[in-house]
Image (cartoon, rainbow, N blue to C red; front, side, top):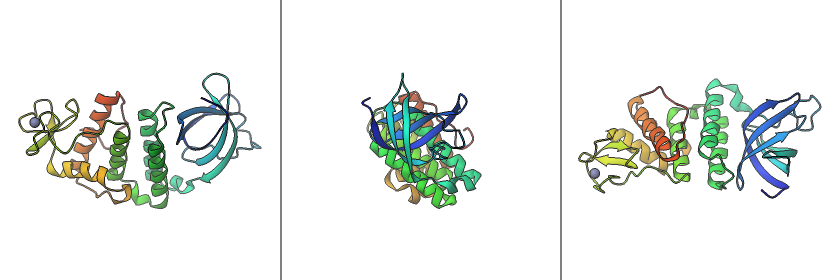
Length: 241
Ligand SMILES: [Zn+2]
């Protein structure tokens, strides 16, 4: 990576390191996920203050360091998202969103659309705690699958192309499957199918809620797709199916 880099970033993880340092996972619009170190960040008089906590949207200057880690040399806050920490539910939803980005986009490959999606999700969660709901979290993940190039096929049977009788979901086939192709699939209700379509087609704030059963089926479809096509295990949002 060429240094120095002046970039926006969202702090995905912030890990204590040594006596006073922090190791950071930063998500950036143009350099993907960047590992960095902030030296002396935990000292009380650190010039970084508290700006390197998870979920902070920052503007930062990074210099090439030794090995894989970039060195943080300056930080400005664009959005602290402090209100995320007011509720356990929003804190948890934000942590899961950052974790899903971290697992599905762990390289320096640029995905500016993923950066914007995550930035929007954090704004939404900090503005309205009611958005810390399963439907929002699942829609966020569906949009991540789209950005990763592994979104499930929903328009027709992923195995034979049939447009009717789409009653199952098969991650191996790559999406919904019809009743003749459902051998390796699990049952997908009409409501769950609609939910997956809405998750892709609507903005995060407007994704409608669905029944628990539909959300569980949608989560299973998303989780199995990430496992099968990206070999990534996402943390469960709802209980297991
Ligand atoms: Zn079929």
